[in-house]
Image (cartoon, rainbow, N blue to C red):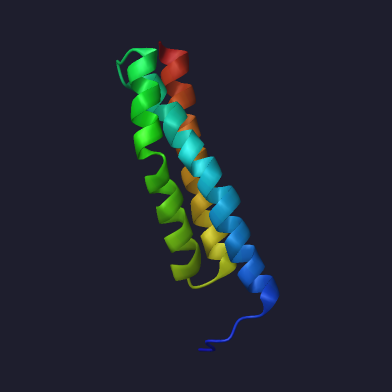
Length: 93
């Protein structure tokens, strides 16, 4: 296993953390916004408080994953799953 990574792999991981983390975080906001029975103001405040957590976890995962492709795959799959749950809740309500 090489410790040294090329600049393209590092750039891919940084982009996975940024873009994939952003997508997963906002998909989480959407899913929780649909499923939690809170007023809009309370929900907005709650999401502002917990939004840095998935972004930080995405950053940690992007560099802990064994490859950049795995980091992209898991983050985009998580974002799709959460967006699907939010969409399902919107359709059912």
